[in-house]
Amino acid sequence: MFEEEGFLEELQIGFIQDARDLLDQTEQAYLEMEKKSDKPSVMEKIFRCVHTIKGTAGTVDFKYLCDFTHIVENLLVKLKNGKIKNNPEITSLLLKCNDRIKKYIDLIEQDRKGILDTNDLEMQIEKQIILADLGKTLDEAAFEEPSPLPVIECQRDQFEKQAGIPEGFKDIGTILVEDKVINHQQLDYAVDLQNKKLGEILVDYGACDSLDIDQALRKQGLNKPKHSEEFVKLPLSKIDHLLDYLGEQVILQTSLDYGRKDLVKNSELVEKTIIQLNKITHDLQQIAISLRMFPLKTIFNQAQRIVRDTALKLGKEIELVKFGENTELDKSILDELTGPITHLIRNSVDHGIETPEERIKCKKSRIGRIELHAYHQGGFFYLKIYDDGKGLDLKKIKQKAISKGLVSETRQLSDKEIGKFIFASGLSTKDEATDVSGRGVGMDVVNTSIEKMKGSIDVETQTGFGTTMIIKLPLSLAIFNGMVVSVAGETYVLPNSEVKEICHLDMVNVRRLNDAESMIEIKNEVIPFVDLRRIFNPQKISRVVGSKCIVLVVSQHEKNYALRIDDIQGQQKIVLKNLGAENDNIPGVAGGTILGDGKVALILDINEIIGIYTNKR
Image 1: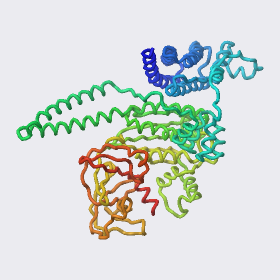
Image 2: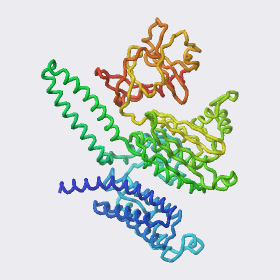
Image 3: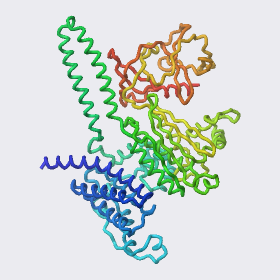
Image 4: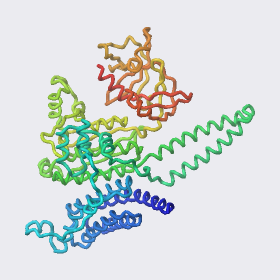
């Protein structure tokens, strides 16, 4: 019996992995169906995916999912035979069904006995089917006297029969207010938008983050540990490549073991083997990194859904064009990138692209255009989000920034500097907030998220012609080329990619403006001088100040800074290690690593260091 249960568990785990891929395919097929309703291959693909989910769900004992997908199939049959007309309303209903199945997959991953509540969607599907059988559309039925629809025994009824509300149960909103994570006004606003989970709404508009929601769910007792580990699909070629290199490493290791028996006699063999081992180790590192690299296709497909739903809600016509969807990025960064991209695309649809009527007046195509460009360049990943809308209202943005005290009225600013204010907290050019945007919190969240990933975001805009958001990120946070430096008697590491230039300068060129701010001239450019000794270990700074110093020129948000260090010890491959929860919030530190001599060194967070310097000015 235990063997049978273990076998079923394996089948269920496999189904959960496969179902997510099938649901992504189905979503894209629904969107394609809406645009190209005359392509039978699209409908065949939809039937194949839905039928596979239904059949496999029944096989692995997920009865609720099997029953619901059967109801969805009934709707698809009516759609295929022409009894129901293909229109945006039907596509929206099918997409909602797809979303509900995705949520159910997340549920059963944690709790195999989870119950799928689909009462609302079943009622909508049944209504469409009944009207189709009567030969009427929903619009035609709206002008007739309402007639009672057959009573359907829905899964919600079963849900209510089997699941009671525990004594002392508190809803998540109450918990978040009690913990002072959000206030009553934010809760009321979120409750008004109950088209999705309360926690998702609060995170979307910046009232709190996902960690706050997770902690509240734990208090509520609903956020149980995942039933199984997370799995990813990998190309077999990558695994074969890894095994080939491991085989070579074993051979070299055997050769090294032989050589060390007589180091004098075999010194040439040992030296040659070590050189080959270094190369193999480097190649293995690259393969290991590649195992964490996944294409952006999933995120790009999600973007297509976001554009479609948001444009439909706002009465706009927009096409999404994707370039580089097979470009790969570290999975940890990829997962964190979904939220910022969602915010930026919604902003392009809401703020950027005009209504069809406005575009025609401006002699533009009535259909707006959003482009996603992903590519690698110079050891970094770039993502550009372009829209051909009206561009940013720089004059209004500057006025808002002045009114909020972010800049003085007399200060002269370039267009790029003005554009940067859209990332300031609470700044929005919308006069009224909607459930899409307008509260001035989304772009601030985007900027913070990008900085946490050690990246940056810039904006380019042209009035009347559109806006481009440019995200720059490291390819991977796990392994990188690092520079080992000394600061006030301690050893630190920073990524080579962060350093633009190394300079040996005379301290007489440093101009002290006040106790916290100094400047230095490098190649006819006056830039801030940041003494890392004063940030990390001011008490160890020698009173005797030498006439020469070493500075590393780094760039943050297109502005250069000179970081003073004591010495450069060398360069090496760095493996980033987390410091643990108790040391997770050390200012200016991104993590730790073990150097070649076995010593531990802290890895510097350049962006945070610049923030510390800026705040002290």
